[in-house]
Length: 115
Image (tube, rainbow, N blue to C red; front, side, top):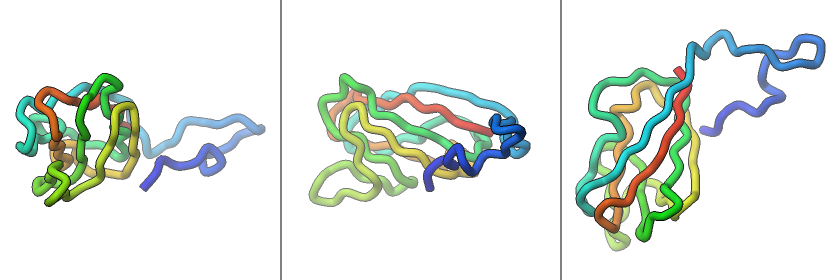
């Protein structure tokens, strides 16, 4: 699920106002140490409504985003692949439920979330 379009944001006199269901914004970075090993985006429960994940622009492999069963290897891939510099956005309840795998040791992502 993508983030809401600006037209879906509350309007007052033609100006966008804050969404009452969004409490704050956070961000982070996650590097996957070992390829072919799914790792959680964050170590502890982190409630969120939306997350935008961007593969680091200097990645040399493919990052795959998914649940705990995510697999980056092409032959058995599970999840959504992101090439270097590419992003995806979706609704989520908890960032700890989002997992990453990569085809190259040390590739990573940056992320921004709304809670």
